[in-house]
Image (cartoon, rainbow, N blue to C red; front, side):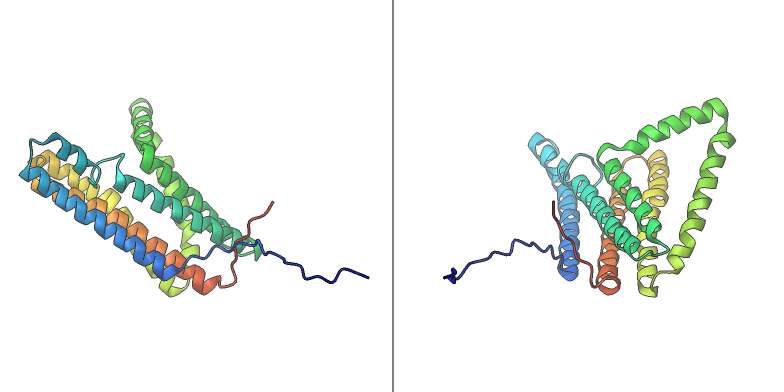
Length: 241
């Protein structure tokens, strides 16, 4: 007679669920806390300028400094953005989407930005470009870079116009905040510093610059998550040998 005793089976499948609304709220909350701690830290330094431990503590929350919590947060934001872009890109490849490589290239760009946030690769690259400019001339160095920027702009123009209206404008807003802060406000910071020195006005400008950079990335992540919810509702991540 066969064995008819009940058998227990275990489903070892694991599902990774990211709630878009919760993730966005969490990121905005962390960003707000970091900005508040940064401002409080500046006030504490002014109140207790001679306390060394206070200087070290405040540095951990200084948006304008490196190798601290805001830098870690910024690097993780960029890495998370890159991860989401890779997920979207590979999902689009499975459906032979025209713009799958646009998503994947964006993922690589954000992966580079996340590494750069931690070890400031751009400073070494700027030094190399400066040396080449001095040896070969500005035109020889800047012309290829300008052509590369135009090529990327053309490459992504159709990609941008092919996005849903809501996603497109949210991408533009997020990108405008990030690029405007990273390049536009940074140049204003340097001009102000050279003209007036490192006074409270300069500190306010640099705080605004760093805050808008982080806000731009958080807004971009929010747009990516909502895009995935609306455009890739059947997307599932599976892990297996």
